[in-house]
Image (cartoon, rainbow, N blue to C red):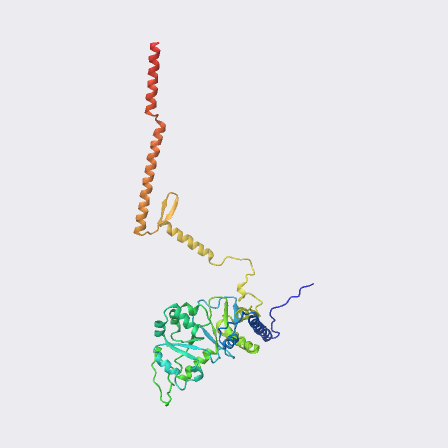
Length: 410
């Protein structure tokens, strides 16, 4: 039977090929959501017997956790999209936010003094729906003093779902929080502008509140709340020096159409701001769950960015290579004056420290002594070979005399 060739992705019928095909994206989203739900049912059916010590609300907590299964967009590029790793994430606004649960626990990390930011969250004009989710407001000084050990930082990481931080101090947090927070990207602190609307802040009586400028400036409650909501509703982009970047764009509990709209918004933001040369530098786009295979939604036909990346003719040496070679030769000729001849091998002068010189002198002396000793032993051996032993000569002379005496007596 003849094999039928099946394509992983389909190109758009009209317009430029450098765009997502909505039908392909919706098909991949539906398949991914279906697979995640089927996998959850399979795990539930094959799970061991429930422990009698578990509380009655455990099933509701498990269901809530299952709804929070993330959906990731995996971007593959032809060339690196960043020269260095950046610990401060960027944000892309999503049409369907991910962090909308009223039970989300938020930790807000602020500049000193922290009391002014606690008063900000407790202000009457600050939305109660948001302040109820902010479980803790902590300053940098107290953060350094209280969370020094690895275990305490791990407990802090597990205690809250989202960490927000003042964008003026976020670059100092990697040293304070350590690798437990930054080895992954799921709970890295999200930058927030806590000084938004400094001049327009009014208290409950309508009087303007004077705020200090600089690192301790506190913004207006309504403006800061708006900044926090925007940060919670955005997709975080952690650009790293590689050709693969994963971005959390949705949840498995969403409708496939909502997932598609979020994916399209993130792809548009990536092409406009983060990927150099846009679609020309994109190799692939996939969506996946935490433990699923990646489903392709867009694949590139060509594997290069520019036409100059392809060599149509036979390879030729780069212009200036010969000059580079001549430069090396000239430098070597300049070094010839600094060379010492040791035997037939030219050796370049190398500056040595006093200890190295002393060690080299000791080794040279030991080698000279060994040579002298061996020379003496060799001379003695040669003398012993050339001259016969004295005892042997005396023995031969005595034997001759005895023979002569015997002959005379006879």
